[in-house]
Amino acid sequence: MPQMDSKTLSLLGLARRAGKLQWGFDAVVLCTRERKAALLLCARDISEKTYRNISFEGARGGIPVLRLPEDRSTVGHACSVKAGVLAVTDEGFAAALLSQLQGGKCEKEECTL
Image (cartoon, rainbow, N blue to C red; front, side):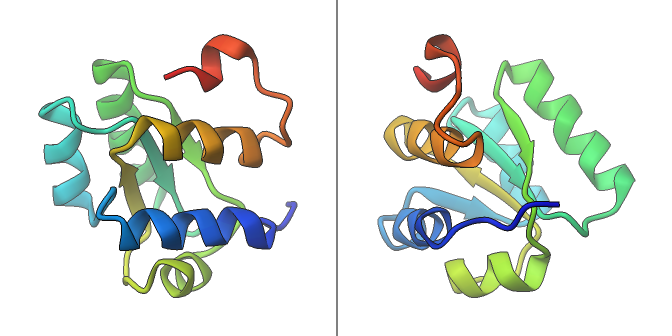
C-alpha cells in the first residue's frame, strides 16, 4: 500500500491546529450527523466494523470516506492526537486532502465539496 507523502500529513496537522479536525469515533459520528463534516478519514489499521460504521455514516450524510494508507500511530503523530478516525470540517482542507490522497487525479466534482 502506498505511503502518504509529507504534504498530506502536514495538511492533517494544519487542519487540526486550525480547529478544522474532529477525531475519535463518537466525535466523528456526531460531526457527521450534524452535517459539519466535509471528509471522513480512517487509518489503515482500524477494525473492519468501525470502518463499516463510518462508511455508513458517510454514505448517509453524502460525505466522502477514505481509508488512509497509514496506521493510527502515524496519523496520530501527524495530528498530535490519538485516534484512527478523523473528520475534516473545512471544505478547503477536505478538497486539498482528497486531491493529495488521490494523487491529484480526482474528478472535479469529487474535489469540489
